[in-house]
Length: 471
Length: 63
Image (cartoon, rainbow over all chains, first blue to last red; front, side, top):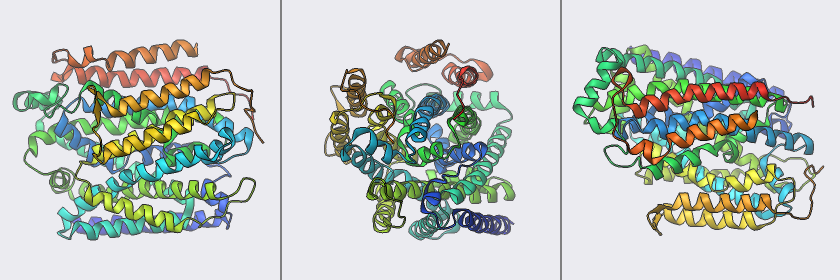
């Protein structure tokens, strides 16, 4: 019965993707800029759902419940409060960014950095940052889905990884930004339905929320306190994660492109509010799935936990929805990232004032896809920890980006230089060449403070007046 | 007005992320859930409400 539902829903989803890609191709009409940025604009509700769906991927349905299962209630501070608070960054940064794009007739952050800093270094640092640190984020989409499908089907993980990656790459190349937004919306809706259905099912198994918490308190009380059973949720870890995740709308290109695709900055406040609401609604059930899972599926590996909690122990239709929803979630996030990355590289390779030429980056994107594939296999960290590496890596360049749209004067090269150095240091710590703590303080916190202070000083400095709006 | 909203948000976030809050012994509260979870979950609708008020207070000119 489960197979029948999976095949039916999978076919329906595949047909939808084909129709969406075809419709997007017709609207794009061979215009590379339209394909890359959907520059003719898209409805606010589509962009809001797309932004949210891109943000909440396999990471949400697989990673977050497992994080609650392993590290306890402080996970809500790590991810729940942070994602809701992100609405304020979307509002503040989104308004500045969108206004800068409009006044200067620009479409992407690469163009903003090029125009604002008047040096190539700033946008090269940005491209390098996203090229390296988006790979772990794409990797978790592959890792999460292929691991689950492997447990369910008995086929090797690498085979599923190849299938998932190939589907993602092809779809992101065919339809462009508009097609990706359409698929995001469907994915977001499936994900929210599945996560609530599974959440209610877990509560029912315990006979209510109070009973669930009472059971956890009796059997695993350490899950109900910080820093959790493993001691991961320390104050520094939670604070560093808060900063890393909060900067995402300003640093991750798949989110920036959705802010840029709004028809005007008047739509940004509504998007910000919608994103916070979506975050709260989609993350709330992960608490009970995770804490309930700690009791019901105590001895299982993460992949076994996903397969049992989301599929095997559920009604066939819910299980099938979870499988298709997870594939859709992995696709929507990863194809957004691949598309945004290739677009930003295309923009960087296009001389200022020239029309955007697409498909110049096939080789680089292929390298990126292979890199993500390799990370998904070689990296043993759990999904959320791997995602956090991506968030922290891109957050290091956050202050440089925010300075570019908020400063009324032309910033100097200092901030890009410090961001480059910080990126290199962080990469060395991820590769375990250098320690990730100095003097008892987390390295990522030190790097955030350094790049943040550099941007703040630069922002406050009285420099030669530049042009806030360069045409 | 925007500054007041910003100050409230920063204060709430600072309190909930402070080591004092995180390290205090946990007391069961609503639905037998720990205080750490209840307070941080309740904070989210509060933040959304402030974001809504902030949205209403922002006036954007026509482009």
